[in-house]
Image (tube, rainbow, N blue to C red; front, side, top):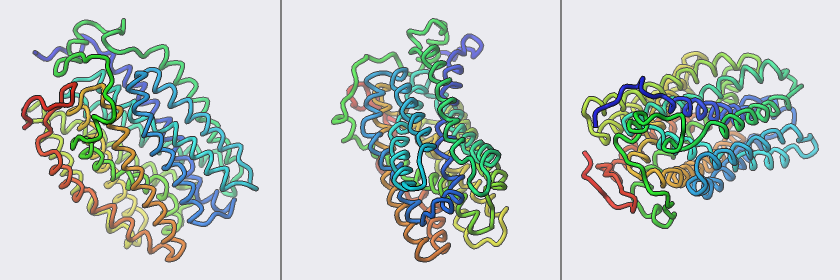
Length: 435
Protein backbone atom coordinates (compact mmCIF):
# COMPACT_ATOMS: atom_id res chain seq x y z
CA UNK A 1 0.00 0.00 0.00
CA UNK A 2 1.28 3.47 -0.80
CA UNK A 3 2.20 5.63 2.14
CA UNK A 4 -0.51 8.16 2.96
CA UNK A 5 0.24 11.81 3.73
CA UNK A 6 0.51 12.65 7.42
CA UNK A 7 -1.80 15.67 6.88
CA UNK A 8 -4.68 13.39 5.97
CA UNK A 9 -5.07 12.43 9.62
CA UNK A 10 -3.08 12.80 12.80
CA UNK A 11 -5.43 11.94 15.65
CA UNK A 12 -2.98 9.23 16.67
CA UNK A 13 -0.65 11.95 17.94
CA UNK A 14 -3.30 13.17 20.38
CA UNK A 15 -3.43 9.68 21.81
CA UNK A 16 0.38 9.60 21.93
CA UNK A 17 0.36 12.92 23.83
CA UNK A 18 -1.84 11.35 26.52
CA UNK A 19 0.54 8.37 26.80
CA UNK A 20 3.42 10.85 27.06
CA UNK A 21 1.62 12.68 29.90
CA UNK A 22 0.82 9.46 31.78
CA UNK A 23 4.43 8.26 31.61
CA UNK A 24 5.67 11.69 32.76
CA UNK A 25 3.43 11.46 35.83
CA UNK A 26 4.56 7.86 36.35
CA UNK A 27 8.23 8.79 36.43
CA UNK A 28 7.73 11.96 38.45
CA UNK A 29 5.95 9.85 41.06
CA UNK A 30 8.58 7.12 40.87
CA UNK A 31 11.54 9.54 41.03
CA UNK A 32 10.50 11.56 44.07
CA UNK A 33 11.93 9.11 46.57
CA UNK A 34 15.26 8.90 44.72
CA UNK A 35 15.66 12.68 44.94
CA UNK A 36 14.56 12.74 48.58
CA UNK A 37 16.71 9.73 49.53
CA UNK A 38 19.61 11.63 51.18
CA UNK A 39 17.15 13.78 53.17
CA UNK A 40 14.80 10.96 54.17
CA UNK A 41 17.72 8.73 55.11
CA UNK A 42 18.91 11.32 57.62
CA UNK A 43 15.39 12.26 58.75
CA UNK A 44 14.37 8.67 59.51
CA UNK A 45 17.89 7.26 60.22
CA UNK A 46 17.68 4.58 57.55
CA UNK A 47 20.75 2.51 56.69
CA UNK A 48 21.63 1.81 53.04
CA UNK A 49 20.13 -1.65 53.57
CA UNK A 50 16.89 -0.05 54.83
CA UNK A 51 16.74 2.17 51.75
CA UNK A 52 17.41 -0.86 49.55
CA UNK A 53 14.52 -2.67 51.27
CA UNK A 54 12.17 0.20 50.35
CA UNK A 55 13.35 0.05 46.73
CA UNK A 56 12.98 -3.74 46.72
CA UNK A 57 9.39 -3.44 48.00
CA UNK A 58 8.50 -1.33 44.97
CA UNK A 59 10.17 -3.72 42.59
CA UNK A 60 8.62 -6.86 44.12
CA UNK A 61 5.18 -5.29 43.71
CA UNK A 62 6.08 -4.08 40.23
CA UNK A 63 7.12 -7.58 39.25
CA UNK A 64 4.02 -9.17 40.78
CA UNK A 65 1.85 -6.56 39.08
CA UNK A 66 3.37 -7.40 35.73
CA UNK A 67 2.21 -11.00 36.25
CA UNK A 68 -1.40 -9.90 35.88
CA UNK A 69 -1.54 -6.25 34.74
CA UNK A 70 -0.50 -7.05 31.17
CA UNK A 71 -3.17 -9.74 30.98
CA UNK A 72 -5.80 -7.39 32.46
CA UNK A 73 -4.97 -4.73 29.89
CA UNK A 74 -5.14 -7.25 27.04
CA UNK A 75 -8.48 -8.53 28.38
CA UNK A 76 -10.22 -5.27 29.36
CA UNK A 77 -8.63 -3.11 26.69
CA UNK A 78 -6.26 -0.18 26.90
CA UNK A 79 -8.90 2.39 27.86
CA UNK A 80 -10.05 0.68 31.07
CA UNK A 81 -6.77 -1.09 31.87
CA UNK A 82 -4.73 2.13 31.79
CA UNK A 83 -7.33 3.88 33.98
CA UNK A 84 -7.13 1.13 36.61
CA UNK A 85 -3.33 1.27 36.62
CA UNK A 86 -2.97 5.03 37.06
CA UNK A 87 -5.73 5.17 39.68
CA UNK A 88 -3.93 2.61 41.86
CA UNK A 89 -0.53 4.25 41.60
CA UNK A 90 -1.86 7.75 42.33
CA UNK A 91 -3.62 6.60 45.52
CA UNK A 92 -0.53 4.87 46.89
CA UNK A 93 1.72 7.71 45.75
CA UNK A 94 -0.27 10.10 47.95
CA UNK A 95 -0.23 7.63 50.85
CA UNK A 96 3.54 8.21 51.21
CA UNK A 97 2.62 11.56 52.75
CA UNK A 98 0.70 9.83 55.54
CA UNK A 99 3.75 7.92 56.82
CA UNK A 100 4.90 8.96 60.31
CA UNK A 101 8.43 8.69 61.80
CA UNK A 102 7.49 5.96 64.30
CA UNK A 103 6.85 3.49 61.47
CA UNK A 104 8.70 5.18 58.62
CA UNK A 105 10.41 2.03 57.27
CA UNK A 106 7.30 -0.16 57.34
CA UNK A 107 5.14 2.72 56.08
CA UNK A 108 7.36 3.48 53.08
CA UNK A 109 7.68 -0.22 52.27
CA UNK A 110 3.86 -0.52 52.22
CA UNK A 111 3.35 2.65 50.18
CA UNK A 112 6.04 1.68 47.65
CA UNK A 113 4.47 -1.77 47.33
CA UNK A 114 1.10 -0.31 46.33
CA UNK A 115 2.79 2.17 44.02
CA UNK A 116 4.61 -0.69 42.29
CA UNK A 117 1.37 -2.61 41.67
CA UNK A 118 -0.20 0.40 39.98
CA UNK A 119 2.85 1.48 37.99
CA UNK A 120 3.34 -2.01 36.59
CA UNK A 121 0.52 -1.33 34.14
CA UNK A 122 2.04 1.75 32.52
CA UNK A 123 4.43 0.26 30.00
CA UNK A 124 2.25 -2.68 28.91
CA UNK A 125 -0.59 -0.20 28.31
CA UNK A 126 1.63 2.39 26.63
CA UNK A 127 3.30 -0.04 24.22
CA UNK A 128 -0.05 -1.65 23.42
CA UNK A 129 -1.49 1.80 22.67
CA UNK A 130 1.34 2.52 20.24
CA UNK A 131 0.79 -0.88 18.59
CA UNK A 132 -2.91 -0.08 18.17
CA UNK A 133 -2.39 3.43 16.78
CA UNK A 134 0.83 3.31 14.70
CA UNK A 135 2.11 1.18 11.81
CA UNK A 136 5.28 -0.84 12.40
CA UNK A 137 7.53 1.61 10.55
CA UNK A 138 6.52 4.43 12.94
CA UNK A 139 6.36 2.50 16.21
CA UNK A 140 9.97 2.95 17.31
CA UNK A 141 9.75 6.72 16.87
CA UNK A 142 6.34 6.88 18.60
CA UNK A 143 7.72 4.72 21.43
CA UNK A 144 10.76 7.02 21.59
CA UNK A 145 8.49 10.03 22.00
CA UNK A 146 6.51 8.61 24.91
CA UNK A 147 9.59 6.97 26.45
CA UNK A 148 11.29 10.39 26.46
CA UNK A 149 8.71 11.38 29.06
CA UNK A 150 10.41 9.10 31.59
CA UNK A 151 13.27 11.59 31.55
CA UNK A 152 10.88 14.55 31.74
CA UNK A 153 9.40 13.07 34.92
CA UNK A 154 12.88 12.43 36.31
CA UNK A 155 13.95 16.01 35.41
CA UNK A 156 10.89 17.60 37.00
CA UNK A 157 11.31 15.68 40.25
CA UNK A 158 14.56 17.29 41.52
CA UNK A 159 13.50 20.81 40.57
CA UNK A 160 10.02 20.57 42.08
CA UNK A 161 11.22 18.67 45.15
CA UNK A 162 14.15 21.06 45.59
CA UNK A 163 11.81 24.07 45.41
CA UNK A 164 9.38 22.64 47.98
CA UNK A 165 11.47 20.59 50.41
CA UNK A 166 14.10 22.14 52.65
CA UNK A 167 17.49 20.58 53.35
CA UNK A 168 16.28 19.48 56.80
CA UNK A 169 13.30 17.63 55.27
CA UNK A 170 10.53 20.15 55.95
CA UNK A 171 7.54 19.75 53.55
CA UNK A 172 8.74 16.37 52.25
CA UNK A 173 5.11 15.17 52.02
CA UNK A 174 3.92 17.77 49.48
CA UNK A 175 5.56 16.32 46.31
CA UNK A 176 3.85 12.98 46.93
CA UNK A 177 0.46 14.72 47.10
CA UNK A 178 0.99 16.56 43.80
CA UNK A 179 0.90 13.33 41.84
CA UNK A 180 -2.68 12.58 42.89
CA UNK A 181 -3.95 15.84 41.43
CA UNK A 182 -2.07 15.32 38.16
CA UNK A 183 -3.31 11.75 37.82
CA UNK A 184 -6.96 12.73 38.38
CA UNK A 185 -6.82 15.25 35.54
CA UNK A 186 -5.20 12.69 33.24
CA UNK A 187 -7.87 10.04 33.91
CA UNK A 188 -10.63 12.48 32.93
CA UNK A 189 -8.93 13.29 29.61
CA UNK A 190 -8.15 9.63 28.90
CA UNK A 191 -11.69 8.36 29.45
CA UNK A 192 -13.09 11.16 27.34
CA UNK A 193 -10.60 10.74 24.48
CA UNK A 194 -9.59 7.09 24.08
CA UNK A 195 -11.22 4.55 21.77
CA UNK A 196 -9.60 2.03 19.43
CA UNK A 197 -8.81 3.64 16.05
CA UNK A 198 -11.37 1.57 14.12
CA UNK A 199 -14.12 2.74 16.53
CA UNK A 200 -12.97 6.32 17.03
CA UNK A 201 -15.05 9.12 15.46
CA UNK A 202 -12.00 11.36 15.24
CA UNK A 203 -10.08 8.98 12.94
CA UNK A 204 -10.55 9.40 9.19
CA UNK A 205 -10.69 6.45 6.81
CA UNK A 206 -7.33 7.47 5.38
CA UNK A 207 -5.67 7.66 8.78
CA UNK A 208 -7.10 4.25 9.72
CA UNK A 209 -5.75 2.85 6.45
CA UNK A 210 -2.31 4.30 7.28
CA UNK A 211 -2.38 2.86 10.83
CA UNK A 212 -3.16 -0.60 9.39
CA UNK A 213 -0.90 -0.23 6.35
CA UNK A 214 1.52 -2.97 7.45
CA UNK A 215 -0.74 -4.99 9.78
CA UNK A 216 -4.45 -5.66 9.59
CA UNK A 217 -7.24 -5.41 12.12
CA UNK A 218 -7.13 -8.45 14.40
CA UNK A 219 -9.81 -10.59 16.01
CA UNK A 220 -10.82 -9.59 19.51
CA UNK A 221 -9.96 -12.87 21.29
CA UNK A 222 -7.09 -12.67 23.75
CA UNK A 223 -4.10 -15.03 23.73
CA UNK A 224 -3.53 -16.96 27.00
CA UNK A 225 -0.17 -16.86 28.75
CA UNK A 226 0.32 -20.59 28.28
CA UNK A 227 0.74 -19.89 24.55
CA UNK A 228 2.96 -16.83 24.99
CA UNK A 229 5.42 -18.10 27.63
CA UNK A 230 7.03 -20.94 25.58
CA UNK A 231 7.94 -18.65 22.68
CA UNK A 232 11.62 -17.86 22.23
CA UNK A 233 10.60 -14.37 21.13
CA UNK A 234 9.04 -13.73 24.56
CA UNK A 235 12.33 -14.51 26.28
CA UNK A 236 14.38 -12.57 23.75
CA UNK A 237 12.41 -9.47 24.73
CA UNK A 238 12.67 -10.39 28.41
CA UNK A 239 16.45 -10.36 28.14
CA UNK A 240 16.41 -6.77 26.82
CA UNK A 241 14.63 -5.70 30.03
CA UNK A 242 17.44 -6.99 32.27
CA UNK A 243 19.03 -3.58 31.69
CA UNK A 244 16.09 -1.95 33.50
CA UNK A 245 18.15 -2.63 36.63
CA UNK A 246 20.77 -0.22 35.25
CA UNK A 247 18.20 2.50 34.57
CA UNK A 248 16.74 2.14 38.05
CA UNK A 249 20.25 2.32 39.50
CA UNK A 250 20.65 5.76 37.91
CA UNK A 251 17.16 6.80 39.00
CA UNK A 252 17.08 5.58 42.61
CA UNK A 253 20.76 5.58 43.56
CA UNK A 254 22.06 8.40 41.34
CA UNK A 255 21.34 11.21 43.81
CA UNK A 256 22.97 9.22 46.63
CA UNK A 257 26.04 8.55 44.49
CA UNK A 258 26.45 12.23 43.54
CA UNK A 259 25.92 13.26 47.18
CA UNK A 260 28.45 10.81 48.59
CA UNK A 261 31.02 11.15 45.79
CA UNK A 262 30.84 14.87 45.02
CA UNK A 263 28.86 16.49 47.86
CA UNK A 264 25.79 17.37 45.76
CA UNK A 265 22.80 18.15 48.03
CA UNK A 266 19.03 18.37 47.47
CA UNK A 267 19.17 22.07 46.59
CA UNK A 268 21.65 21.64 43.73
CA UNK A 269 20.87 18.13 42.45
CA UNK A 270 18.52 19.61 39.83
CA UNK A 271 21.18 20.70 37.31
CA UNK A 272 23.09 17.38 37.17
CA UNK A 273 19.78 15.52 36.82
CA UNK A 274 18.70 17.96 34.10
CA UNK A 275 21.85 17.20 32.08
CA UNK A 276 21.58 13.43 32.59
CA UNK A 277 17.93 13.14 31.67
CA UNK A 278 17.98 15.64 28.80
CA UNK A 279 20.68 13.45 27.29
CA UNK A 280 18.44 10.45 28.00
CA UNK A 281 15.59 12.21 26.17
CA UNK A 282 17.84 12.77 23.17
CA UNK A 283 18.64 9.06 23.21
CA UNK A 284 14.95 8.17 23.20
CA UNK A 285 14.18 10.36 20.20
CA UNK A 286 17.32 9.58 18.20
CA UNK A 287 17.09 5.84 18.84
CA UNK A 288 13.47 5.70 17.75
CA UNK A 289 14.12 7.88 14.72
CA UNK A 290 17.23 5.95 13.67
CA UNK A 291 15.69 2.49 13.42
CA UNK A 292 12.53 3.88 11.79
CA UNK A 293 14.59 5.80 9.22
CA UNK A 294 16.61 2.69 8.39
CA UNK A 295 13.39 0.71 7.83
CA UNK A 296 12.07 3.42 5.50
CA UNK A 297 15.37 3.22 3.57
CA UNK A 298 14.69 -0.45 2.88
CA UNK A 299 16.48 -2.17 5.76
CA UNK A 300 14.68 -5.15 7.26
CA UNK A 301 13.08 -4.56 10.67
CA UNK A 302 15.43 -7.18 12.10
CA UNK A 303 18.57 -5.43 10.88
CA UNK A 304 17.40 -1.89 11.68
CA UNK A 305 16.40 -2.65 15.27
CA UNK A 306 19.47 -4.74 16.09
CA UNK A 307 22.09 -2.46 14.55
CA UNK A 308 20.59 0.44 16.50
CA UNK A 309 20.73 -1.58 19.71
CA UNK A 310 24.33 -2.63 19.06
CA UNK A 311 25.42 1.00 18.60
CA UNK A 312 23.68 1.85 21.89
CA UNK A 313 25.52 -0.94 23.71
CA UNK A 314 28.87 0.43 22.51
CA UNK A 315 28.02 4.02 23.51
CA UNK A 316 27.17 2.88 27.05
CA UNK A 317 30.57 1.25 27.71
CA UNK A 318 32.44 4.38 28.98
CA UNK A 319 30.15 4.60 32.06
CA UNK A 320 32.45 2.04 33.71
CA UNK A 321 34.95 4.89 34.33
CA UNK A 322 32.54 7.05 36.40
CA UNK A 323 33.63 5.86 39.90
CA UNK A 324 37.29 6.73 39.28
CA UNK A 325 36.66 10.28 38.06
CA UNK A 326 37.68 13.10 40.38
CA UNK A 327 35.35 15.78 38.97
CA UNK A 328 31.55 15.91 39.06
CA UNK A 329 30.72 17.08 35.52
CA UNK A 330 32.70 14.45 33.58
CA UNK A 331 30.90 11.84 35.70
CA UNK A 332 27.54 13.48 35.01
CA UNK A 333 28.28 13.51 31.27
CA UNK A 334 29.22 9.81 31.16
CA UNK A 335 26.12 8.86 33.16
CA UNK A 336 24.08 11.00 30.77
CA UNK A 337 25.63 9.28 27.74
CA UNK A 338 24.85 5.88 29.26
CA UNK A 339 21.29 7.00 30.05
CA UNK A 340 20.87 8.15 26.44
CA UNK A 341 22.14 4.80 25.19
CA UNK A 342 19.85 2.95 27.57
CA UNK A 343 16.74 4.86 26.45
CA UNK A 344 17.50 4.20 22.80
CA UNK A 345 18.16 0.52 23.59
CA UNK A 346 14.97 0.32 25.62
CA UNK A 347 12.56 1.79 23.06
CA UNK A 348 13.96 -0.44 20.31
CA UNK A 349 13.60 -3.36 22.72
CA UNK A 350 9.95 -2.47 23.32
CA UNK A 351 9.22 -2.35 19.61
CA UNK A 352 10.57 -5.88 19.16
CA UNK A 353 7.31 -7.07 20.73
CA UNK A 354 4.75 -5.51 18.33
CA UNK A 355 7.19 -6.17 15.47
CA UNK A 356 6.86 -9.90 16.13
CA UNK A 357 3.67 -10.53 18.13
CA UNK A 358 0.04 -9.77 17.21
CA UNK A 359 -1.33 -6.68 18.96
CA UNK A 360 -3.63 -8.64 21.27
CA UNK A 361 -0.60 -10.34 22.88
CA UNK A 362 1.57 -7.23 23.23
CA UNK A 363 0.66 -6.17 26.80
CA UNK A 364 1.05 -9.74 28.09
CA UNK A 365 4.50 -10.16 26.52
CA UNK A 366 5.61 -6.75 27.79
CA UNK A 367 4.40 -7.73 31.27
CA UNK A 368 6.31 -11.03 31.25
CA UNK A 369 9.48 -9.39 29.98
CA UNK A 370 9.38 -6.47 32.39
CA UNK A 371 8.84 -8.91 35.27
CA UNK A 372 12.20 -10.50 34.44
CA UNK A 373 13.86 -7.09 34.47
CA UNK A 374 12.33 -6.33 37.85
CA UNK A 375 13.62 -9.60 39.33
CA UNK A 376 17.16 -8.69 38.29
CA UNK A 377 16.74 -5.16 39.67
CA UNK A 378 15.62 -6.55 43.05
CA UNK A 379 18.76 -8.67 43.29
CA UNK A 380 20.86 -5.66 42.26
CA UNK A 381 19.30 -3.40 44.93
CA UNK A 382 19.79 -5.95 47.69
CA UNK A 383 23.41 -6.54 46.71
CA UNK A 384 24.28 -2.87 46.32
CA UNK A 385 22.69 -1.87 49.65
CA UNK A 386 24.58 -4.60 51.51
CA UNK A 387 27.90 -3.79 49.80
CA UNK A 388 27.61 -0.03 50.44
CA UNK A 389 26.96 -0.60 54.15
CA UNK A 390 30.07 -2.80 54.41
CA UNK A 391 32.47 -1.25 51.90
CA UNK A 392 31.16 2.32 51.62
CA UNK A 393 31.45 3.93 48.17
CA UNK A 394 33.64 1.19 46.68
CA UNK A 395 30.42 -0.68 45.93
CA UNK A 396 29.68 1.85 43.20
CA UNK A 397 32.72 0.64 41.24
CA UNK A 398 31.08 -2.74 40.67
CA UNK A 399 27.68 -1.21 40.00
CA UNK A 400 29.02 0.96 37.17
CA UNK A 401 31.18 -1.87 35.79
CA UNK A 402 28.17 -4.17 35.43
CA UNK A 403 26.09 -1.27 34.09
CA UNK A 404 28.56 -0.66 31.28
CA UNK A 405 29.24 -4.24 30.19
CA UNK A 406 25.79 -5.83 30.42
CA UNK A 407 24.28 -4.46 27.19
CA UNK A 408 26.78 -6.07 24.81
CA UNK A 409 26.44 -9.42 26.55
CA UNK A 410 22.65 -9.30 26.46
CA UNK A 411 22.62 -8.23 22.81
CA UNK A 412 24.46 -11.41 21.87
CA UNK A 413 21.92 -13.64 23.63
CA UNK A 414 18.95 -11.75 22.14
CA UNK A 415 20.30 -12.36 18.65
CA UNK A 416 20.84 -16.05 19.39
CA UNK A 417 17.24 -16.43 20.59
CA UNK A 418 15.67 -14.40 17.79
CA UNK A 419 18.07 -14.24 14.83
CA UNK A 420 15.47 -13.30 12.19
CA UNK A 421 12.56 -11.67 14.08
CA UNK A 422 10.06 -13.71 12.06
CA UNK A 423 6.54 -12.31 12.72
CA UNK A 424 3.96 -14.50 14.46
CA UNK A 425 0.33 -14.71 13.34
CA UNK A 426 -2.75 -14.60 15.60
CA UNK A 427 -2.11 -18.22 16.60
CA UNK A 428 1.55 -17.41 17.40
CA UNK A 429 2.79 -19.40 14.41
CA UNK A 430 5.51 -18.03 12.14
CA UNK A 431 4.21 -16.28 9.03
CA UNK A 432 6.87 -14.92 6.68
CA UNK A 433 10.63 -15.29 6.75
CA UNK A 434 12.31 -12.34 8.45
CA UNK A 435 15.36 -10.52 7.12
